[in-house]
Image (cartoon, rainbow, N blue to C red; front, side, top):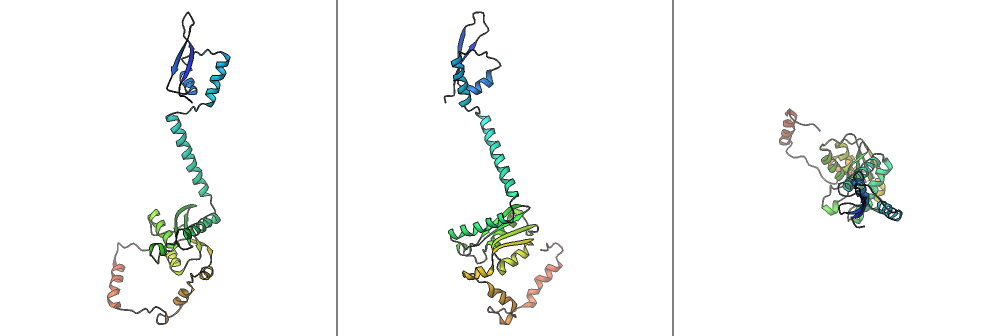
Length: 242
């Protein structure tokens, strides 16, 4: 609709002549708000109906008013989204991890996803990017832990819960313990993973064997030199235990 209106108004003069004034700065509704205190309107009934329709159809918000409405809408939407996320339950977070695992397959990664939550808020997510990043340690749980530590600026994830689409492998389980995460929720079991080629049961078996009987031989070398770093750590009063 054109942003001008023709206003008939009666000047306070003895002849009571009607004149017109054009306003190019506002819509009819905005013009009425701006000038209703200074102008005395006099319309014929059909003209009044036409003007009323224009007021109803016109967008009364312009300039700063419209920006304010947009800003308020955005803030309310973000507030509502945050409120919804805060009320997500364990099943919702697990579904998020499962969806990540499914999407990751389509993106060339392994079928694993993880979500780390603290105080009802998602802190970090991770997916398996072993082949994509050429990194055998880039499991979903490890990736999520790395991201969560960056976000929270701490190596201690106490108070956090991890939701993972599959039962953690020995490496990820150890990382979860080292990160001091409070609780683990998982979807698939390690047996399910083994059925599709991700069998880590042999690692558990290896850990139960004496060093000399394991498939990868572990040979101690230069222990008398290696122990010095441990002694330095023990005597360091400024160390940060973890």
